[in-house]
Image 1 (cartoon, helix red, strand yellow):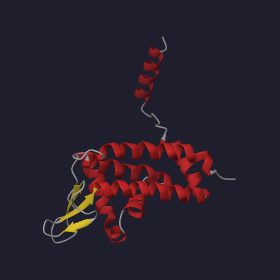
Image 2 (cartoon, helix red, strand yellow):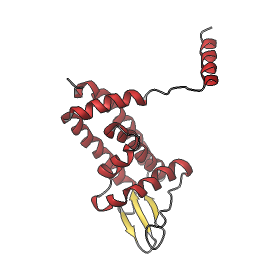
Image 3 (tube, rainbow, N blue to C red):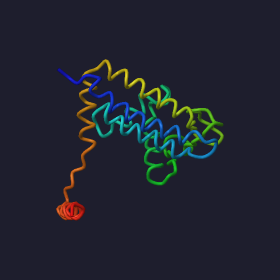
Image 4 (cartoon, rainbow, N blue to C red):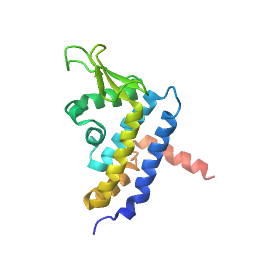
Length: 187
């Protein structure tokens, strides 16, 4: 029969609300929050991309299809990597090397610079965080419309979200430590 949209609507709405409300809080102040907002956008792509495509590498696909302008899509993999891994692991964007004559830096701008605009004088590709946040909101809307129309996507969503919520503890020592801690809490 397949999963109805109504069966997943609350989970989808909760996910969207958590992400977009946090993004709104981060982008609202006049200064600061650029890197935190950019990191939230790309990690949201990772989470929602896994639901959309049913694969661990779905984040790049979601980023490419929903957030990157058409002309930048052929290089979206290195942009995603520079944002996602650079921000998550060092809170700096990574420099994209060996892609052009000069290394390309990613600049995260809140208001001043245009979105996905390359400045050849400084060798910087700018990501405008206000536009990025707007694009993510539109991506959620587009994905929701796809979920309403496509039972395969709904089935994938519900099956994937169930898997994402479970962490298997495999280390026997850690399992035993969990058992002891929980037992202590019950006495």
